[in-house]
Image (cartoon, rainbow, N blue to C red; front, side):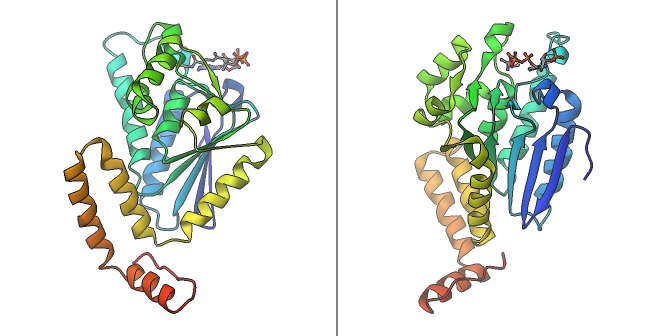
Length: 260
Ligand code: COA
C-alpha cells in the first residue's frame, strides 16, 4: 500500500504504520485520516498481519493533534461530521480484531493522544509528551478524548488534563496508567517489536477473542460481561489452537499455533 502521509510495511506478521508528516509534527489532516482508514481497513482483513505497531515519523512527534489549519475552518454545521469521522477511524483501530501497539515517540497531543488511547497497548519513549490541549483553542476533544481518557485513567485526572490543557511527560503518563511502559527513545521500537512478536507467537483466535472481551467492559455490566466471556471461552475450546496449546503443554513442547 502506497500513501502520501503514512508509511506502511509488514515484517514477520507485524504491520508497521508510521504517520509521516514530520514537518507538521504528524498532525492529522483530512488526507492522513483517509489514509489511516484505508490502511487499517486493509490490515483488518489481512491474515498475514497479527499485530500492528503505530508510531510517528521524525524525532519530535507521535502526532501533534488534528491539523489546526483545517480545524480552524470548521463551523457548527461541519464540526460534528469532522468529529465523527475521526471517531469512526479510531473505533476501527480499537476494534481491529488484532492488537495495535502505540509506540509514542514524542508529542501525543489532542488527536495524537486520542489515537494512542484507541490502541490496545501504549508504550512511550522518555521524550513522549501527552495532553488534550483543545481548550486552548476554544474546543473540547473531539476524537474520543473525553470518553477514553476518563476510562483509561479516571474522571478526576481526565478532568484536570482536559480542563487545563496541560502537557504531561512520559513518567507522569506512566504513573497515571496512560502508558504501560517508558523506554529510552532508541529502544522504543525494539521493545514494541518484542511485544508484538510475543503476542504473534500465541494462538491468534485467543488473542482476538481476548481483545473482544476486554473491549466489551465499557458496554456490559459485570454479569453480562462474564456471560460474554464464557461464550468466547467456549468458542476457543472448539479450535485447533486449543487442542495444540493443551497438547503441547502436556507433551512438554512449544505449541505451534495455526490460528484455526
Ligand atoms: N496542526 C497543524 N500544524 C501543526 C500542529 C497541528 N496540530 N502542530 C504543529 N504543527 C506545525 C506548526 O504549525 C509548525 O509548522 P510550520 O513550521 O509550517 O510553522 C510545525 O508543525 C512545527 O511546530 P512548532 O509549533 O514550530 O514546534 P514547537 O516545537 O515550537 O512546538 C508543539 C511543538 C507541539 C508544542 C506545538 O506545535 C503545538 O502546540 N501544536 C499544537 C498542539 C495542539 O493544540 N494539538 C491539538 C489540536 S486539536
